[in-house]
Image (cartoon, rainbow, N blue to C red):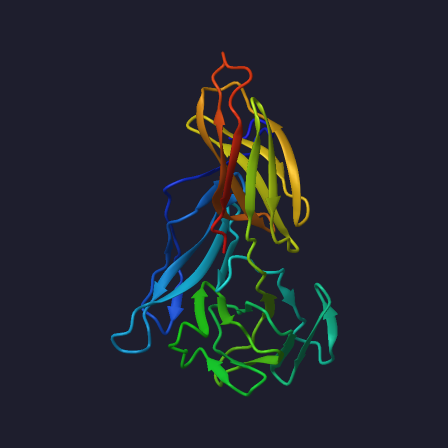
Length: 308
C-alpha cells in the first residue's frame, strides 16, 4: 500500500499468474511466476516460458510472454516483448486507406486487411476478434510467407498463435518490414475487428543510489516509450512507498528516508504499459541508519534491473 496515494496499492512477490488460453500448435499452459505485480488496477507480469522445440531432442525455446488483467475484466497478452504500443484498429467496411489510431495506414478490402510495419521492430502482434468464437485466418508477410490458424506454425522462434474467448492473437518475432495482410480462411465467419500493435524496446532500467544519512539521490537511466511509466519504490519488511517517477531517458530523484527501522531496503522499478504493471525488478538498495544515528553512513549502491 502506498500511503502517498490513498486507495491505491501495488505489491509484488512470489506469485503465479496462469493464463487460460489455447496456444495453437503447442502443448503449453503458460504460467508467469517471476516479477508478478498486483495493484489496485489489476495483475500483470512479464516472464520467460519454455516452449517445446520443433526439432526432436532439441532443448525447449525460451519465449517472453507478458500478460495483464484488470479487475474490470480486460485481458492483455503480449508475446516476444514485455510491452506493446497501442493497438491500431481498422474499419472492416472501409475500402480505402485511412489513418487510424497513431497514424498508421490500415486498409480493409476484398475480405483482407493490410497494414505496414517498419523495419527493426522487436515484435508485432495482430489481434482478430469475431462473434461466437475465434475466427480462422491467415496472416501473410511481405515476402509471401503465410501463417494459418488452420495449420498453425510449430516454430516458436518465429510466430505464435493464441486463442481465448472470441479473440485470436498472432505474435510475430522480429517481423519483416513491409505490407502484411490478414484474410479469412474458407468457411470462416466474417471478422469483426482486426488490429495490430508494435513491440516496444526493452526498458533497460539502470539506477544508482547515493547519499548520507536520511537524504539520498537516485540517479537513473531508462529507455522511454509511448505509454510506458517507470515508478521507483522503496521496499522493506514493513515498507512500500513511492520515491518518484522517471521523467525521460535519464534523471535524478532526491528523497528522504523515513523513520522506520534500521536495515537494508530495496529500490524497485515498477514498469507499466498503458496503465498495466507488467514488470517489477530490483535496481538498487539503501541502508537505513538507526534513529539514534542522525548522520548515518555513506551510501553508494548500484544495480541494473533485469528488465526485458
